[in-house]
Image 1 (cartoon, each protein chain N blue to C red):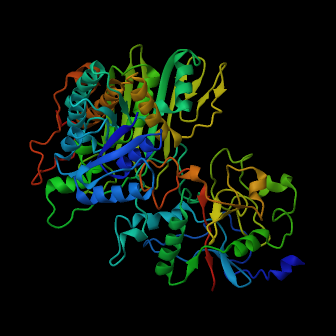
Image 2 (cartoon, one colour; image 1 turned 90 degrees about the vertical axis):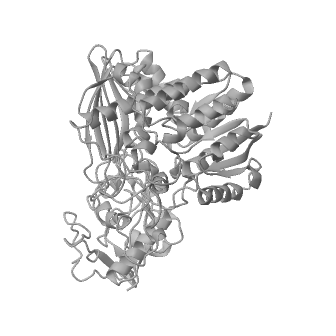
Image 3 (cartoon, rainbow over the protein chains, first blue to last red; image 1 turned 180 degrees about the horizontal axis):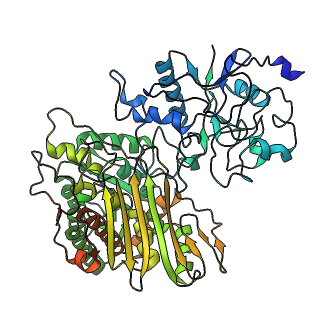
Length: 241
Length: 384
């Protein structure tokens, strides 16, 4: 079986059992990050869920309290204009409206905080994680009819992102690989489709370029290096060891 | 006909407005730039020249910095000025531009106090007499989706309007920390968005967009405002403005629109405007009308395109001699925002009549770098 070839080794402590009711990671009461819930696949680890606002916000908050010796360009500047009408979500909803720079700088920040090197998944890693052994269009086969059980997309999302980990996971225990928000890979392309997209954009092999319309509304020049407010675009962490 | 453009205020938005302007139509050329600070002008010029667009042709001798930079630019050979400094400077800039016979694009808001609003309205009237075009950066009025939604609403698609609600609930914007040795005036101007006399507070500086849609959709200003507000999360050392307002705006006949705005990080966000009528609801931000005359905007205009469209309309107006003049409309919306702010600051109901005659004037006594103590954060019940 192809799935077996992926050597889906589930991380100790993660148990391989989907835990949609618990956060994929959390911040301790002292404000320090605790390790993310990562799933090991062959020679890399990948986040069980998309990075949430609860996980991303402490990075933004350092704008007000920059640690000594850290340059201003390494933390997100607050936006120079307003959020989109529907907002960007909060809490357990996935962080979105982000540029690739924002996602990459977050990985660097988290790496400094934890002493482990987090990064964006490569395109190949992302697709292997998404498929979870499936050779079909989706992790669950070829039919769109099962999509509703596995993904937030245009037909069921109501035009907004949803808290991570609510839909069925794939065979590796990964949530929202299809839908909810687009996810950056290290080549700058986006994978997985979003709550705003039709099924074909959610397919495991589908790749998309960053769209100009996601930053068109930014009235400032140069445009923000951090925010792409009109993009349902977030990310998922990866780690090599 | 070539249009020579001068940019006054070279921050992120001014730089954006310049790019929007030169790309909105052929033969529109940016030839002059003015800013308070050399570094801001240099950053902006570098970005714009980096566009390699034929509409950027700025020479050193047409670059000006300091408090009188705007006047030097306006007195030079430009046809159109883009007024994009902090709004506290807008009235004096609009007056100088109109008096020198220049067409005007001015960013929102156009003032921070009632005296400033009246100065802009008066300058707008002089512009009309001179057949000058004045366009404001309340870009939704140039956005097909908003124009079509409001038009249908005004034509009766939702019946009689009974109530409404508007919101600009968003996260905190940027701030600039004070550098050692920096004077009050310099720090305040660099950190302008958080200082009352420069930004007018966030209900005026940011929520003006939604308030403008409200005033436009309701057909005019409210008669009364009752507001609350305060400062829950903004850092104590960051300026003297509030971080949230809620205002009940009232029109004749007991029609109320509830207005919410806040700048709070990591909280629910929402920006929108909804007008509830006897037959349905109009929602300009989603381009939708519900009820028997249900309708949805299906056009291609995005919120992003309206930033260029407002300049295309401006340039077309100059070239055709039609002299579009938005000075009064944007001044009225600015004053409605100020009316809500003053109600929250004082804890009193503020009528349109009162705010229209108000002598509140935030202008500093002197425009020069030096000491300028900030007013304390207003405490309702203690502010007259």
